[in-house]
Length: 225
Image: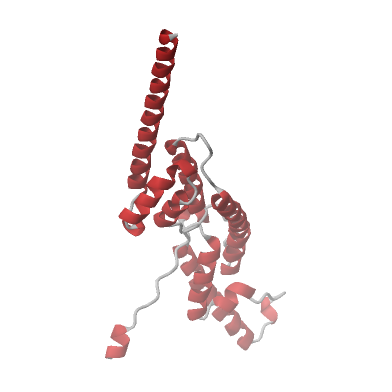
């Protein structure tokens, strides 16, 4: 065996993971590398009667059938059994491919539409006046998780940046402090939430104390009167 052959690595069969558009692109490229794609795309050449075929035509048909079996074998390895059981017709590789396309390409379109709507919702998201830190984090993370489920590779740092720029004005001081004292890239969502909760509690305590002072002052005025 030559060193060139020993160092050659066979490409792995792309396994279907639910993301049809990505998988179909990888699988098509894989089948092309094996020289089976044309057969998968167009199918086996049909003949009205095989008895009337010449020897050359019979050989061509046998070659196509053998290639089709090999292509089917790759598809069987790429597709989970639970998915394969939903495909009723598995006579040829083209049958399997067309069935996968009908089942999952439409689903992929729906996911893209949902993701587009979620991205828009995430973009315009902001904290409401009077909303608690916990409630705002819950709303933000719910949308972020839905985006990820629909295929968005949303990083935590993008969520953190979004939260920091969409808080209400009463958090301006602590937001500036967090940006100056912490590297956003190394800050976790939990750490950010904890810092904002502490600030929220301090502001709440300040409001209570201020109200208590006003009540005391008012009672003092009444007693002097």
